[in-house]
Image 1 (spheres, chains in turn green, brown):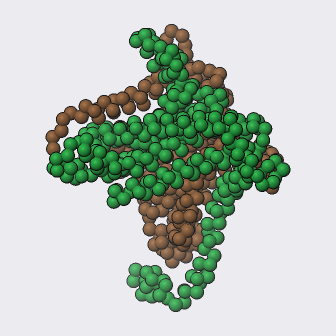
Image 2 (cartoon, chains in turn purple, cyan):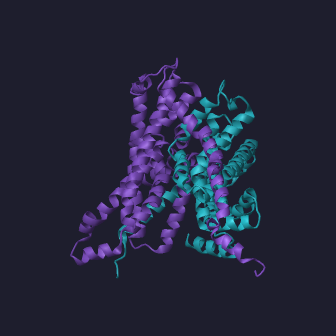
Image 3 (tube, one colour):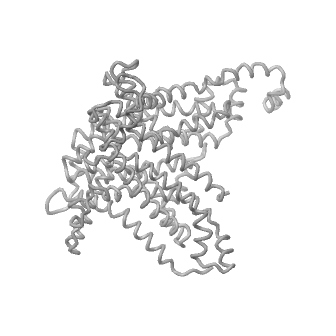
Length: 307
Length: 275
């Protein structure tokens, strides 16, 4: 250490103070942007440009002229039905996921459950929210399919024929039930910070002022949680809206939600108009942007209480 | 404060546990019934003895590794450079890294097929190698949000500016600083992102199917249409694998740079006891 002259030490701690280095610094600063060029180039080539290609194609006819016709054609019966089905399914699965996930988070965080159980469920949720796609569909076929364990046990032990009630794993409510397997864990994970933000002091203050538990939830708990819950609902909605592999593994491609319709269009131009396919993609992007942006807005609003 | 036994909460947790565990049990139970009359692991044996299983799994594993490698090469220098020199650009870079969460995979691959299709400026889909490259690029994009967050969190945990100045004062070049100083310090963050990338791309279906690649996702869907017991066995194995990957991801994400192996094992043992 003694070998290092004093000048070097000051140089290390405050390089700007040395007049000689000021100009090379400035020169390097001018070329700093080169360092992020690969990142921007990659994203432009493989994300932004392809998406832009589809978006601009949505506003062109097959000869390449500008038109709004494709967007208007989205309201044609077959496509509108697909969108409506997708929206209903995403809404139902997000709503069920939101309610069950919030209840589970409440039970684990505020409901007096032991800490180890909470850790266990959180860890499991991390896994289950990533356990989507084809294997999930297989597990549910083995459970709620025509020969699935639950179906068979209900039939043999309780004399209850699940499929006679109109339920089928390969229909609307079957899909909603399957989606729940990754929706509920996702809800639990994203709502946990908000639930933890409900401070015990608030509850104690309400209790000492004579509030009943119901009054506490109606006047304090629910209003504080509402933006978070609503935001997370939108996240779940977007999550369900983009789901494709699970649907294909369960129903083949018979259940024509929007991603399935787009999948078929890419495979074989089933709409007989490539530009209408672009408009279909644009509609999906629009719905995803809408729900994700609203989610972010609501989340930043909810974070006021978590400081 | 003493509380009553939480009946309501217990009921919720029990119902949730039933919902989550019954499908796993059902799939496992179903997978054992391939041989009529007694329980056996025949379905698992059948899966492992299939050549197609091995070849598609290998293909997807190679594609996933390529995506991890490329993702790390892309993200690490960028995240480093932005933190060191261009902090004003950080919101933009971060926002771009989150975009793939908004673009559904089916839309992404649609754009790829059009932009890199026949007669385009870069007709990647015309050759088999080109299509493979396109698949890997797609996986890099799909995993970018997770990779970027993992690496950026790793960068936040170390003092980049000091490390860089120390390296420079000892005469290291910019490249050497990244490779020999920064990279080892965020290694566990990269590994954490890598496990997540792997779990996303190994069984991925949409991109692989639309690009017509012999990957594991399309193979699983085909198997689901042809067979009864093997899919259940696959579901169980896939759940086990997801669990392993997530556990590994957690272990590496919480690891501090330079931390020794022993305390890490002890700390992960205490969390696994909680499971």
